[in-house]
Image 1 (cartoon, rainbow, N blue to C red):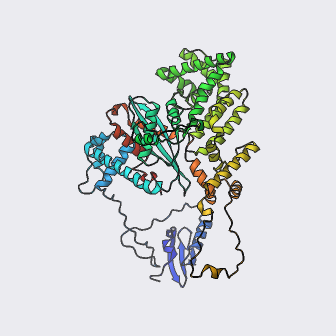
Image 2: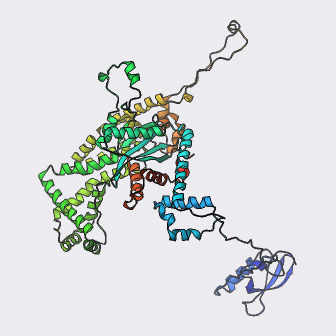
Length: 618
């Protein structure tokens, strides 16, 4: 039996039995738990009989598993006794970090956490770094040398971007940008982000292009020139289908100045004068079509238009002003007094939200937080703080205000997310239906129609929504308008139909036969090849599913989707760029140069150290 494997000796409960003998394919053991000489027989390759014996005869006994023997020298399991195979030796020692890896890891930590560059000179930080196993001559550089390394990383990011641009942007036909101006620490910056949809995966991608310092007044010509320079520096002048900004008059005028003149405004100029003025600085700018931020527009409706509507009527004006005045008193008291804030937490177990003019929906969220407090607790809080208590009419007004504003705030949150431009019209359509359903809310629906008058019937917005598989034409209630948008989509398919769908004229093969010889033969007429049908593609698309990947089956509609859904309905991406900028350009870092600030911010926004392929993913 020596050398033959036996399951009994490696069994975890084998120590409850004593091995007696082995014959052919069976072994005999004695149970040490049984009274007397209880001999059992089982096969060599299984312990099922022994297991059943323990369960039936010793079920009340708490069994313990046998710990397998350890040691460098172990024999194979044989009939002579249990052994275990040799274990592989594990190496728990950390591999040393090279000098280049150490610099990149520290740079990633500094940029991603938006820390000051002089962190590398901190003795406590350097003490932590010294605990990391490094290769020979690997040492963390000090601030001056580390700054040079960050400059090289930014140059590498730009080189990666430009190099990818030559390859990838040639494959991307349609991109869009968002732009805005941000002021902090008495400095102004122009921020621009780039957006596009991958033709292969249909995923949305974004990247920050610039956050450049702007000096002087923010006039429309300064804004237009800066946007054109940023687009031109990346070779995007002919690829940007739209630029999304807020409703600021300077931004609106900058793009209106570049709009094409009407037919009745045609003027004739001398060709020599045009050529001589080619290099003048006051030449015509080249800007893409302009899109107003839908989230900012809805925020204007929620604040200015609603306030104007409520103050028009004498009865609503009185309750609106009194209730908002008491809310403002609560906000002021809780934000300026620690005692008031502690009293607030003690009574209502929560903190008040303070409205901020730069945060969309902040006023609604602040009012909603107060309306969620029971009226008894709210008035108890006002009494302790020495403020006027809320009346029943005022408290009811706060609840009605939140109920009426909820659809608007929900639409704003949807549009400021990472969604395509085709989300805009379906959202507005549902928003108008919800506001119309609310009692005495026709004025709010009228404000939506007025503010979005140029968008509701816009061709680009209609095609963007219709080419989105999750929307198609389902969001249109009117049958006539649905047919109109369907015809618009069909006409656009005819315009953008790929050349592959249209059979190209193939030249006849050259042969040695003369034309007179070929005239001797007669042939049957060849069947006509099936030509591209835009109507068929649109019908098949409308009857297909709602998954985004179905666009790969419809090349023309896919091209329409890539073009008209490249923009975002909101300028929120560039606002998020500025939010990160506020964490980088802190008051304590007011000596940070504009160029270095831009480089640190762009590397952070684009996640250069953690996800470098996000600039232009494959």
